[in-house]
Amino acid sequence: MQMKHLNNSPVTDLSRPRPTRRDVMTGLIATALSMRLASGMGLIPDQTTSEEKVQMARTIENLLRENLHGVFEEHDAQKRRNNIARLWAEDGVFIDHNSRYEGHSGIDHAAARLIEKFPNFAFTERGEPQALNGVGKLDWGFGPAGDKAVITGIDVLVMKGQDRRSLYIP
Image: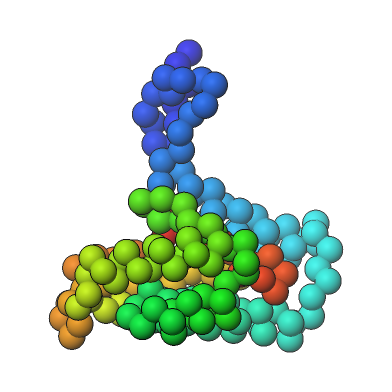
């Protein structure tokens, strides 16, 4: 029997299969959904109040928006670095289709490269952010300022406690 990845491609190296972007996104969604179901069914002790959950959701929504516009759209390098220091944990991780960027300097490098490559582009939010149990997502568009987006994507944010730890762009 031949083993296959979730996307039905054959696994050639059984010692180290490489997940596809779809595998990663499916895993993130499945994790978020299972966290919600397990907590709602009483399988995971829920130690946060409704008010704390609402506050966490608002925090995640604000972080997603502030990161999109205040980090990845900020042309002033000093303002961008200040926003990164305010929004991101010291050991935060940003992952996109190009690479994995760790810490404040890595995140700044990723944002600076994007701005340098597309200096006249701007982000637009394509809907409201959604947050659930420390995980949030924001759909966005990216294109020439004032024009229709030529690139679309999703930011997925994962928090640990009160610290922003990871942001994925599937």
